[in-house]
Image (tube, rainbow, N blue to C red; front, side, top):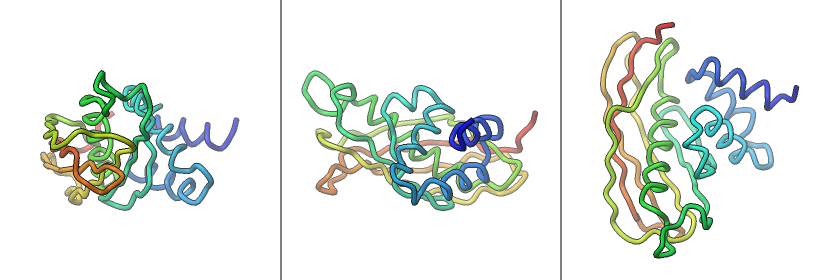
Length: 169
């Protein structure tokens, strides 16, 4: 079994902030590492994989994730489909939030909304900063991701509420 397969299986079993950070530390300097990280996320959450996210930056509480322009993410107007943008917003907020979790904590999204500010064309990058969650405490956190086009213009803004709490088995 390849190291990537082992890492993906470990990530699927544990899905912890530590596993997320460890995966990124192994992949971030590898050729295509951001694409591979996106594939891991897509294996963990299959619908997320439909946009083929590419992780550009991942730090504790911070994520930049790109979705390349492809026919399968476009609408009938040849711009990026609203739900593809929503999916990108969710993955960026989720990765930022999950990377900020203390050990023994997990999260689930409870609310997601999107403002569409202009027609989205080309590759779109989502950027999100999330607060550090308090260990052992069940709490909701609101986070925002700005989605920008290749010119750096904000095309959409996602606002997500993540319920964070102790992991129970």
